[in-house]
Length: 101
Image: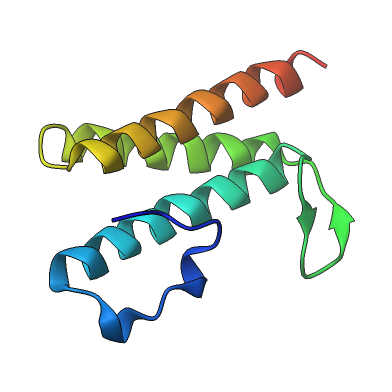
């Protein structure tokens, strides 16, 4: 399944069951990524329209994605594994950068 920029742009009515599960996985990871990036002060909180740095929140989101990685190890399609690993690498690097400030 080709991932789009925004998973919400895909019409689920035209997807197979496998594609729907993949879309849900991408969405889950993407939501945690966005919450972590908000906690890192990299994205505005859409509710307040402000940058709100909260490293505890960011760490929790990263830990949650690491737990998902651990429990899905060997059970995901390669594309999903690579996506999750990429997101985790990006978040970890940003976390180290922000926590050293």
